[in-house]
Amino acid sequence: MLSFPGIYYFTPTSFAVHEDSPVQDKLELNGARICATTASTYELYLQQDLEIDAVGTPPFEYDVVPGEISSMKDTSTCLNDVRLGAGGWCDRCLTSAPVGQI
Image 1 (cartoon, helix red, strand yellow):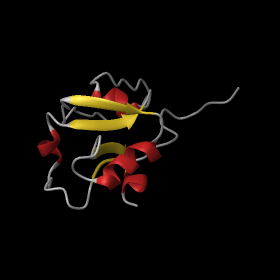
Image 2 (cartoon, one colour):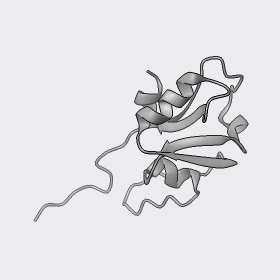
Image 3 (cartoon, rainbow, N blue to C red):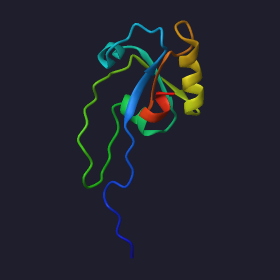
């Protein structure tokens, strides 16, 4: 029998916006349309329905309440929309920090 720790994988999360976006703080994203991959922890966070039932899980708060969640099939699709900037389908994305910093 194997015994795994409560957390065996952790990736920081970040909001990605277009480089020309006036957004400087995540709180400015309240009420905005934000994309996330379908059925991901990112989407569950935006839906305020994320529950991680594991020993050692750090507490988290729902700092951002989107006006609309745009569910995309994958992160590339979300980030492509962000790349298009203002006027695109969705110019804000919640994803892993390493991916969002590309």
